[in-house]
Image (cartoon, rainbow, N blue to C red; front, side, top):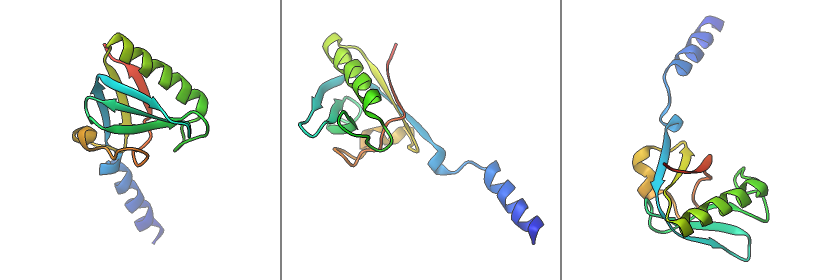
Length: 116
């Protein structure tokens, strides 16, 4: 029985699950909003609707406030300078960038960066 359990565990680790996919959503940021509640939303060209990325007042989906302030600053600058950004999401497929849940239902990004 122990061998069967170990064999099954090894098989599970050998084949990646669909949840291990990742998406890099890249494009311009049309707007960066910060609400009175502290939630930071953007309108990225890949989604074209309000998508929450973090909260400056409290941890949101594992993103702390210091990281949120840094992301807010980078995204605001990208908006003003008309620069491209990349927002990386774990657990999504690349094709899902256009259909990421909007507002506070969005998953938290793993990272935000300026794109080349």
